[in-house]
Amino acid sequence: MKNVIITGISGQDGSYMVDYLIENTNLNIFGAVRRLSKPNYFNFQQHLNNKRFNLVTLDLSDSQSIDNVVREVKPDYFINFAAQSFVGASWQIPEQTFDVDAVGVIRCLEAIRRHAPKCRFYNAGSSEEFGDVKYCPQDEKHPLSPRSPYGAAKASARHIVKVYRESYNLFAIQGYLFNHESPRRGEEFVTRKITLGIRKILKAIKNKEPFAPIELGNLDAKRDWSHALDFVDGVWKMINQESPKEFVLSSNETHTVREFINVAFKYANLDASWHGNGLSEELSVHNHLIEEHDLKSSVLVRINPQFFRPAEVDILLGDSTLARAKLGWQPKYSFTDLVKEMVESDMANECQNT
Image (tube, rainbow, N blue to C red):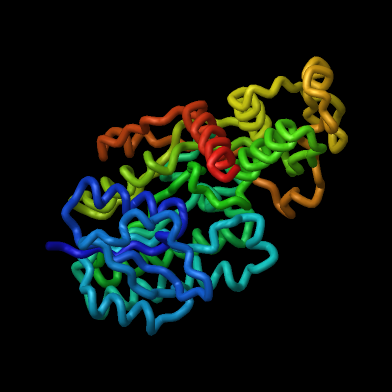
């Protein structure tokens, strides 16, 4: 039986990959976690008693831990989803971002080179590598032009993956993953910040209490959003090609943050409208709801300049034509499917907790 190491299993992509491989393969899965004072097993707790699932301690900042695990497991696959993945935070912790997202990849490749040279290595790339885009949509030929320390770290990792692939004949690739979300997305990301904010507002309305608005930055930023479940399928197809080639995974559609907000509030059954201009623009509940429910607050979304990035990426729009043609990959979730699931999931969790 073959072995796979998956990093980042406490997060969105890694945990979905564990789910996917448990269901669709007979691989022995070694889920890598960092040692923490308070372990976070929430996203993979359903697999803890599965004989095919093994927890291992591995930290991308510690070469010895990576070397130990690769030497002992001798993996056939190594899928690296671990990262400092919050773009906004990368300006505050640029060195840590580079250490984990770029140097950490070197540590993984070195361990594979020494102990498992036949291993197939996948590293999660990002559309943030394109950054200051030169044309739309962005395909595999688009130049790297990052606008954040996170994007620069991922671009650096892409170059080192290529170097190791060509220098040591390793099967090593880094996919171009455009934005992908789910109910498992971290709470600091804008999409989950919106859906969790809606949950808090609905709870306040139910309890006839005042509520604070959701505070966001650039509402006009355009992103290509997909469901993470679609992407783990694409990653698995990518890592099982005959020869190592890198592909864009994307929905081939772009939507603004404002559109995400509008669809989310629609599925929360909250009638609202935008008013004001520039930094004073707000989304507020319709007057009839204020009267019907005797609301103590009315503003749902407000702009906070604190959340604008030092260098903004205005639009990301992927072209996954090659992945669809060469890998036979096809996303199943639409943009509205994604938003609906995220809103309903957070609303259901609130019901379970009350």
